[in-house]
Amino acid sequence: MKFCPSCASPLSPRELEGHTRLVCSSETCGYVFYDNPAPVVAALIEHGETVLLVRNKGWPEKWYGLVSGFLEKGESPEQGVLREVKEEVGLKGEIVSFIGAYPFHEMNQIILAYHVRGHGEIVVGDEIAGVKAVPPDKLRPWPLGTGQAVRDWLAARHGLGPTVA
Ligand SMILES: [Zn+2]
Image (cartoon, rainbow, N blue to C red; front, side, top):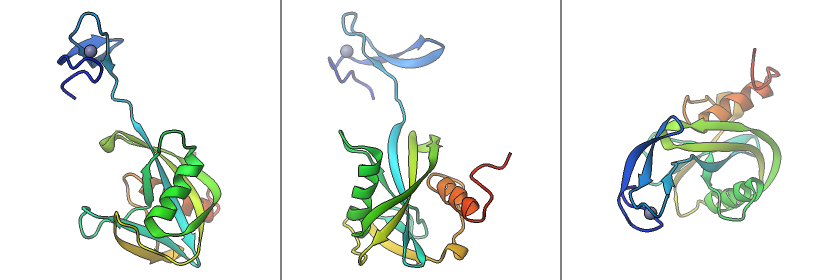
C-alpha cells in the first residue's frame, strides 16, 4: 500500500497508539491503513475413510494443505467453508464441528478451521493442482497455517483435547 484508497494521496508512516501505521498524508482525509489480518476459512474434510488435502495451483510440488479460502462479503464462516469445499473438491459438505481459530502471521490471516464431512464424488476445482486422500492415521500435521488445525483435530481424535495444559 503506497497510496490512500480514499483520496489517492501518498501514505506515510506515523506513530499512532504505540504502532507505526501508514497514514494518509492529506490533512483533510485521515485514512489509516491498519493492515488487519484477513479471515480465511479452512476445512478438514473427511471423505469416506480419508482426509482430503489439496495443492493449490502455483504452490510448490510437495505442498498440500486443507481446503481453504477467503470469506466473501456477507457470508458466514460456515457458508464460506462449505462454498470452498464445493469449489475446490466438488463435494457437498456438512459441518461436524469448529476446530479452532489460528493466526497465520506470515500471510496476515486468521484461519477459522472446521471439521467437515464431505459427500459425493470428488471433482477437482479450477484453482486446484492436486488432491490427496490420506487415512487419518497417516496424517501428519505441519507447523504453519492450516497444519495447526490438523494437529488439534488429530489430538482431539486421540482423546487429548485441543490444548494440553
Ligand atoms: Zn486519503
